[in-house]
Length: 315
Image (cartoon, rainbow, N blue to C red; front, side, top):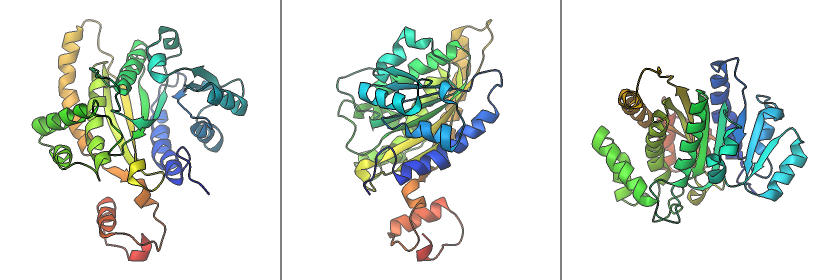
């Protein structure tokens, strides 16, 4: 049976064992008087909608909004889930900045599941499109003083980001190495990062997301990282995160500049914490018993699961 990008066994593992626990934990602390709703890209089959409404009923269909760029996929979603599902057609970048769409905010959980690279820029820009989408979303949420859970995924294969996007990665790596002494990402980039580009971005992207959140008065925590390969090859590597945005609720008597100065210490704290969050390597977690594994995989297994080394047929 052919593997599907949006519904590979690894992606199913991410939904069930990575995103669902984060979502359920967040719901426990979410204000009872605020609607627990969900914004997602969904895709043509709406796998995540099916998972979060039918298999694990966390949301009702009426509390879900979809941003879908394909009219055909939007029609398929409407037929599958009925008229209660809110679907808005358009590019995510355009919708995130549209004032009319701002009326649909706030959301409790936002799932930005990109299939391309995070730094795949076609033209030179001051800010990559996907960061701008997140900034727009944070601004909408800030207007409502509403914290939220961000589930983020994107392609992290070594050749997926464009030449115009790669300088963003290198500058972040140099900054993190200079300020915090965390040189792993910079070291890997200087060696080409062909085999560990996802690990590089796993260290760097959270630092940028933390900064985006703090600039909109959110204490932003990277609560998890996961890496999976839906086609069991490095060129199909997907990197996933969960971020909790907690609204700081600054007093009206404090100026914006005062708040920003106060948030600087928090930014540094959360960025350093994010560097300590270990990424879950999903394909190795799912490796069936008896399958031969490399020495590198065994070493990584021992790092993920400390303790006595299990026999070879236990991987």
